[in-house]
Length: 87
Image (tube, rainbow, N blue to C red; front, side, top):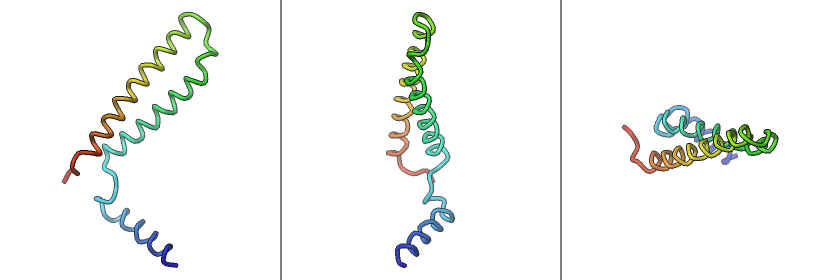
């Protein structure tokens, strides 16, 4: 019974207190990270289905570019998370 009450109290705190939620930048960085990971996984699964030569090289280039973008987004997420909360 106490576990249920504490979960409900935490859920209501998150909904009513803005400081208990992630800010818009944090949410944006989260979804950008998730989208990039999904795209990278899909490309990795399909990359060998492209014709050898230019199409496959272009997909590998896109994969590498998205991977580099993901690295930058992760670095931004870490920096944002480490920074003091915005008032």
